[in-house]
Figure 1 (cartoon, rainbow, N blue to C red):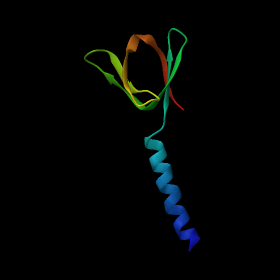
Figure 2 (cartoon, rainbow, N blue to C red; figure 1 turned 180 degrees about the vertical axis):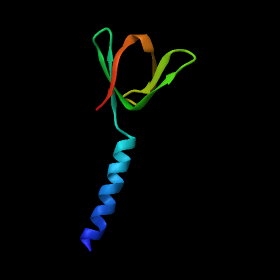
Figure 3 (cartoon, one colour; figure 1 turned 30 degrees about the vertical axis):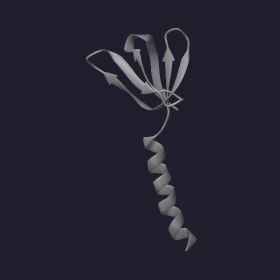
Figure 4 (cartoon, one colour; figure 1 turned 120 degrees about the horizontal axis):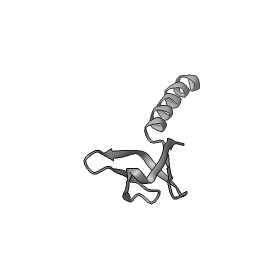
Length: 71
């Protein structure tokens, strides 16, 4: 019985974990920002919009970011 429940639980956590992974932004000034979820790029303004660690939505110029990656 336990084996029947184990596989669906592992699959559910894997899927949910992949959707909500944090990302990291390495800025040109040397600072690092950990963001919730994947940042979005607004092509019209050139800004990268992200949610910071406190849950606030922030925006930063794409030119100020040296590298983006997932944790």
